[in-house]
Image 1 (cartoon, helix red, strand yellow):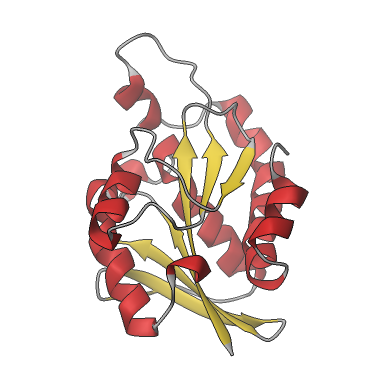
Image 2: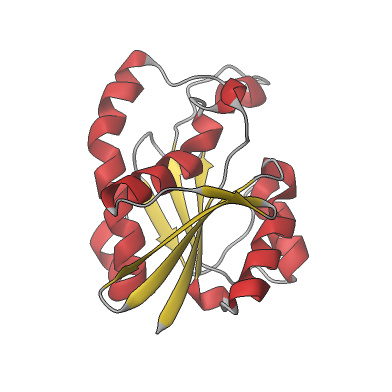
Length: 188
């Protein structure tokens, strides 16, 4: 049975729970909820798994903090014997309008420290990633405050609609494949 590792990037702890930087955690939480599974704390992260359409999905929320995510990702890929092609990393992106989805087969880290660490630990930038736009509504030099800031009320209300769509991206990645997922969801 084909296995897929779905990594939601974020920072652990209540302090970060509702921040833009934790959209990866939010999306894998949505997937877990839709498939009625719970996360358990394990080595280097919180993990949940489920079967869907003949595939096994392993959801991971690294406990290493965002900037050291690569250690957790590499460990779980090796433990579960999952290739880079079957690993999807979900992260926030300042360069994309709020709520916009962009799925890619590879790419640069775009200045994102979590992706930078994953690329360094895996020795490649050729792994699928799902970037969720958080927009760039911040003053010059305030980028860190923005991504570590809580969602606005308006953004929160729109997330209610965007999270189920984001969960569909995850299952599509495993069942329809990367190319079909990109064609179906990119720009939505």
